[in-house]
Image (cartoon, rainbow, N blue to C red; front, side):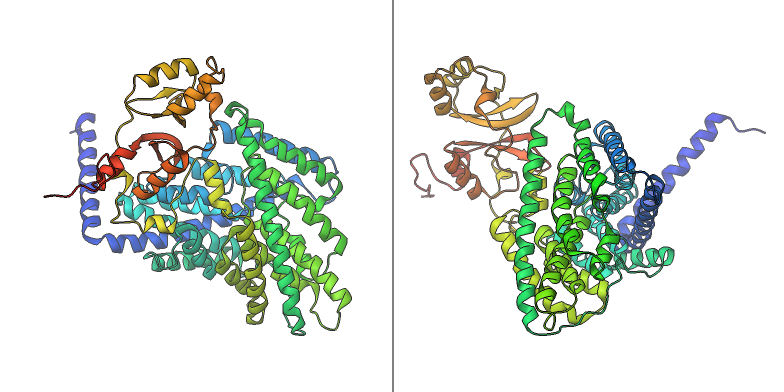
Length: 587
């Protein structure tokens, strides 16, 4: 007796429904145990993924740049690779550009932990191809997004609550850093210090477990080989502490130069029309190719050359030259939109800077200073602390690389000096600034602690009156005179691009700009706004600074996505203040 296809299909659906029901019941009863097991699984999968990323990048790079290959390869391959990746990133994987750390933080704080499977696969493939073609960016930042993405996909597919999915992102990020750097302790601190922004986050236990699992997987497959082979450190004379402080100051200024140059160049690329973004990465490829023709050490992240600097096997002139060339190559490659991170480049620049200063110090004070390699090692930590702004991660990372406690004090001195200089002259950390340029406004620790305050979301309303960017000033003034408001959000193709007040419109009309479009009055990269989770007093402060009485409420993941408006009258009403400025009191 045969079973009809209809009955067979119904049976399969019933089986699936029963299985799903039982899984949902298990999650409700034993969610913490499921989360623990999932943490181990994520650690293992992320470890495998990072190992695959390392192996594929190295092997593909060896095929593209075989030993003794012609010089033309050093020009053609970076150009071709960046051009191909630029098209893929523009056409198929728009969220796979850049480092991956800002995108991971955006997913955590503004997208309910959502990272798509397409972004994970695209980030992996584009990073492998980009780095193998010689673009001098790092693999560690992309590994963070891949690791967090694997955690996000698994959490969602298994039906975890959004809060638990979000908690898995730092777990995946820590697993990625542990495997990429072979530094499990530093991975834990980085995940909490930079990704979470809270060293006391409740996911500490899961982060530690995933980091250890990923590190064990990497060690099983690749062996317990450190990222760099470092000679034993030795403090020769107390005078060296002063030299290390000088190194920290120099590292701080180099960090500022790196951050400002990258951000300024990236701002210029982002101002270009979106339809041109597919060819932007080739600008970095051309820059790298031309430099690589004359100085091959510029190509790739250059960890082998870092090893030479650490062991005193690199000439002073070459190290100074590489500081300059690598600074330009890395900032151009990243700003133009190539897939890759800034972890590796910061270590490279630090090693070259420290090695150069160590060479000079050892030349003039040979009896009072250690070998130049010791300064290259401390320089790596100083640049990482100055650029990434993760000083605790920097100290632990160098300690785990050297396994020598005596390097800690010089490293802390240099890190402190570098962090002070970089914070003094570049107020906004690089990851926060990069996210800001992408229209992603991440909450700081103070904002996240603002629970219980009066928040914008409590008084915001729908935006019922809007101005279109292509409207003329004359038309906008006529609309404004019939409105109940005195300021309005300006929209362009469904995106909010600014705010204009009645006074600004009338002044523009008086100045003879009646036929100009409203877009000409705006700076689309920055405009006054608030987010729904901002405190109301901040909204009042921003209204006062901008001299307007309405602010658009925008999405944290996209500053041009309008969620509503908040008016000064609404804010004052929430505090019980009447139109004359006095507090209403119940009689």
